[in-house]
Length: 72
Image (cartoon, rainbow, N blue to C red; front, side, top):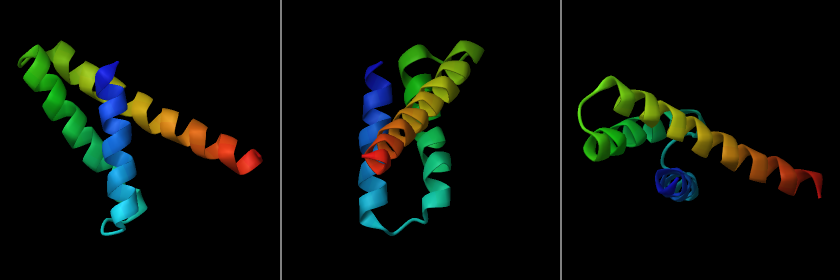
């Protein structure tokens, strides 16, 4: 759960820097998510799956917040 928040914060920081185009941010987050997951859980298939899932949750969570703000 903490990794999701970490990835959301990193994603927001990368977006605000405006150096990287928005279409590359999910890929960058995936690489970071996989790396952190492998560091925490070791080199196995479960760690890779967790890395993909936490990245998906972080990107999805950010999009939910972004869409909610657009509707208000």
